Image (tube, rainbow, N blue to C red; front, side, top):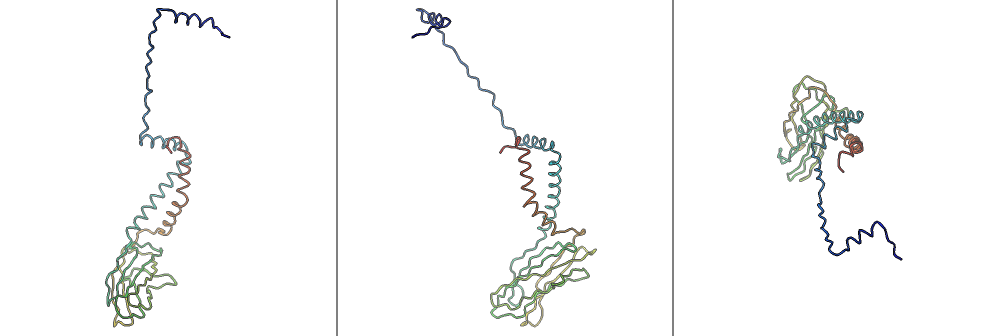
Length: 239
């Protein structure tokens, strides 16, 4: 059963009529203008604009950045002041190395680490290392500590490490000098192994607190801040 549409049939009849010539239809495809990806500067600007709309988060970011910059500055001073020596010759076939911070802060405990290596052929007994400060700079030790590190017995080729705790008091001095002396039972006299210079901070600040603050920021505050920023800036920052 055929169905005829009165509107379509005349057109078909006209096209099928002899002598009718059809002109090809030209189709021009136009590409839409390509959208260039935003530059890094534009993304940063868009992120800052989006961040400023959230005043609480913006203030939190500024506060954490300021604290982080202060902490990193003090941490950099602490790192640069670290003295870590290689094993070097001492006296009577006894080599040594030291590790300490040359930047002291009043009422902040520091560690002075000494390593002794017996390179001789005989055993050394009652070996002690003593850190002696010269002048009137008030640098002491903890209540249960001493400026003497007891190494006991050192067998040939044996290595031992001990630590002396330093506790500077408040002072107007800015430099402290100290000497490392070592004594063994087999020696006729105490021997001077090293000289050390310490700078004393003009302003007291908690070095240990700075270290804990950096650890807390890295361990807790930084991931939290990153999560908040990703949620707030997900529309302007690509994944």
